[in-house]
Length: 79
Image (cartoon, rainbow, N blue to C red; front, side):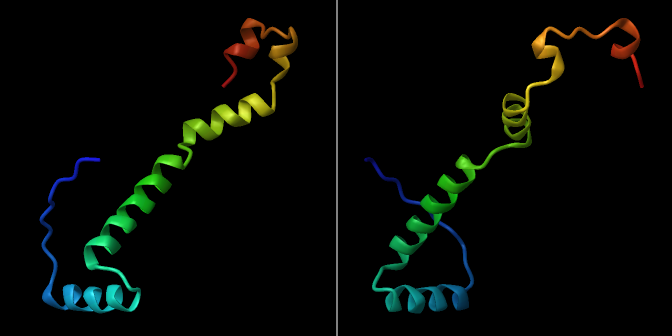
């Protein structure tokens, strides 16, 4: 896997606190940041969007028209 460098700007206090935390975990700050990003990017790509939720709901709960029911013009245009 090819890697690239990334420059980020953080406060001195955050950098020092993060280095201490990483050291307590037995990891480098670079490793901690990489794991954090991998975990969160993976998590967000696995989450369902509202459209995904709707499609799954529709598949699990078929509506009456899937069983031969047809809307008439009045029902289709009800508001």
